[in-house]
Image (cartoon, rainbow, N blue to C red; front, side, top):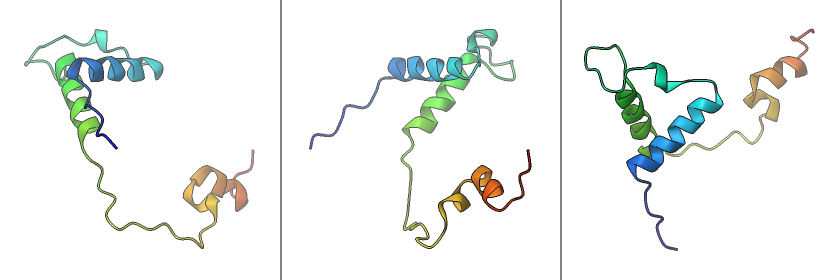
Length: 86
């Protein structure tokens, strides 16, 4: 199987801007590139690209086969245990 070509910075920037827009974050409210600003678009995009490109290390994690599925997800667990009362 051929290794896929890594995305370019421009492709990742488009992906990042789209994902942020989908959750309601408008990067255009930040300055484009201002080293004196607490944060700017260039740094946000660089940090997001870096995070996306990092390889995830799963080490030797093996999920507990005896755990009920709700234990892995807090919201269903609270319903399952009766802690949640609407």
